[in-house]
Amino acid sequence: MAENKFRLVLAAVTENLQQVISFIEESIQNTDHSPKTVIQITIAVEEIFVNIAHYAYPEKNGEVVIEAVVSDDPPAIAITFIDSGIPYDPLAKADPDITLSANKRQIGGLGIYLVKKTMDDVSYKYEDGHNILTIKKLLS
Image (cartoon, rainbow, N blue to C red):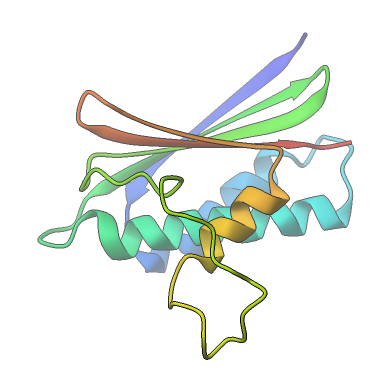
């Protein structure tokens, strides 16, 4: 099984979002994937990165490490976000009740819900002072 590993380290600020998206697109450029899959991955990456940029470091600026592992058997990508911000498990929050109208739903939580619904696997752990969130998506 062949794997290609990519790593990006940058400031966790929303101004770096396009650089993050480009990094992910470059990571999968030589794989067989559908446009729908790329859109789902891009939306998930944007949601996670923007949340880290907005909430992980409230008192100061911090860094985020993004690691992408592209494998070919099965064709998939695993993207891991690592930050040393406030410990926060986005998977611990209950999913929003999407049957309620928008004005009856609580604010927040839709983004990570979308990530959980569109990715094949989402996991979180807090280890050695770091939030580690990994999303996986099959590419074929």
